[in-house]
Picture 1 (cartoon, helix red, strand yellow):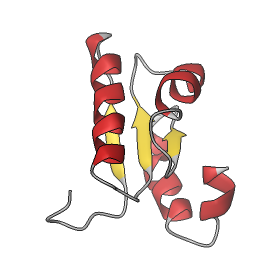
Picture 2 (picture 1 turned 60 degrees about the vertical axis):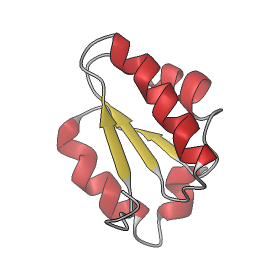
Picture 3 (picture 1 turned 180 degrees about the vertical axis):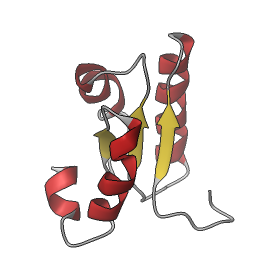
Picture 4 (picture 1 turned 90 degrees about the vertical axis):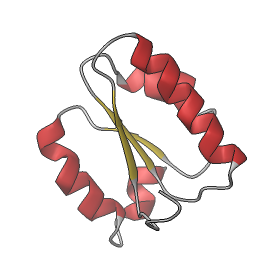
Length: 88
C-alpha cells in the first residue's frame, strides 16, 4: 500500500478469524502512520464490530460497507468532497 500510494485500503472478512486480522491490520496502519481510510466489509463483519473493535484502533477513518456492490460508490464518495460525511 505504501509503495503503490493507495487512496483507500479495503479488507473483506469471510470467516470469523478474519475479524482479528482486521484489528491487527488497523493497529499496524496506525503504527506505520497511514493516513488513508480503511474500508471494512464481508460476511462476518458488522457496523457494530467496525465501530467497537476497529474504529478505536485507527484514527484516519474506518468505514463499514454492508455490500460489496456499494464499495465503488463508497470509495468515490470518500475520494470526493463527501469524504468528511463518511468519516464522521
